[in-house]
Length: 470
Image 1 (cartoon, rainbow, N blue to C red):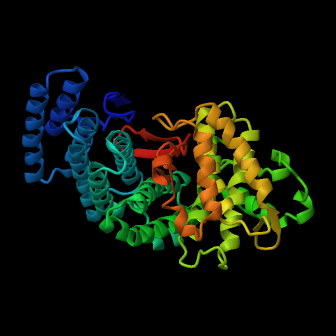
Image 2 (image 1 turned 60 degrees about the vertical axis):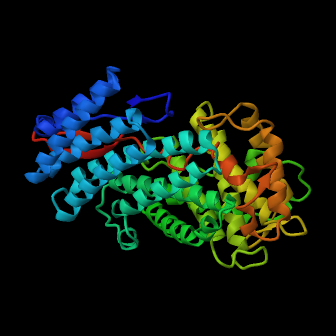
Image 3 (image 1 turned 180 degrees about the vertical axis):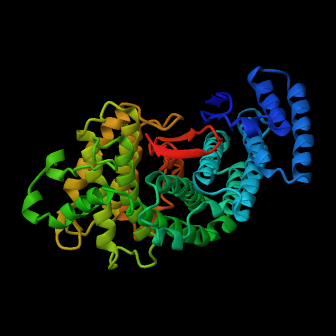
């Protein structure tokens, strides 16, 4: 794993492309370029190796040697991410890798596990690019600055060009039973990357004073709805995870008024822990299993919130409340499980409880209850439980990569109050406290593609690869 701490916390893994591709001149020139950065050679030397790579790449194109060029372009994109001149250059080189990879896919030149391997390489580049965009452009460059808007537009263009990597609506509706588990997980990861970026972009646009950017929210909302629907469908195809999801929602439906009436606090067992399930039933659930369950609940929450009739008095209101409470229940189970010492788990819980708390507030009724499909759950009780647990993560300093805000507890409490007394759910997205927008605060929360899967690609003697979960 290579990185550049002066640019961002992003790291990029480098792999052996097999002897067949590693011996190609274009790959050797890409390796020389990458190692010139690792060895801290001068920029002049690095640019000399980059020109040699361009020359070798042109030869590959002339001879239609696209596979060799693909693996070399990954290495050059990795170099541009950690040692290149600009974020724009990194986006350009990542786009070149994606263009070549998608060309091979359309031609049918790569299939099966080799195709998943290429998609995994693309994910590495896009995740690293997201972190650089997040840390060097948006956080350090000023969230509402022109530079931030340009970065969003460029990354949007890149991801739009890369959308063939994503499973279509037909693909997720017709997942064959024989499809390997690892293959489904790769596709969920790709969709979650898009979810994170476009949710960021949506919040940024809602916080922007730029009229054109604000008008773009309709398009961004449509993209989010499409991605969220595919995420929910794909996760429903994974083994055992749907059982935990069903239990988190079923317990909400089965709650009665007497269970919570008169309670001033709600410990974990009163909230109703969900028995987390592992995709591998022979093992104890892993962090990735809990992360998937959270992703489903959040996706359902956000999907309902994007519904055109998601006003406080609408029929979609109970579904919003149920997803917010279900999200809290899964967090409670993660806290009481065997993962608590893990900082990653704390980041997942803090992120999820913030969004759950925001919309348990926003879905309250005047009588102080949350309407679910069959009963009422005390909103005061649920909100108090969420805030109590969030406080512990504020005091422990749980933030994603860059430091959070001073007096975070007060900031979040005021966001919750704005959500509670707003005239509509849609107003929540443009909430602001003392010049800090909801978008600004969201940048301190862990992305939704964190802590998913451990996947390994084994290389065989004939140069082929096979994918497996570890």
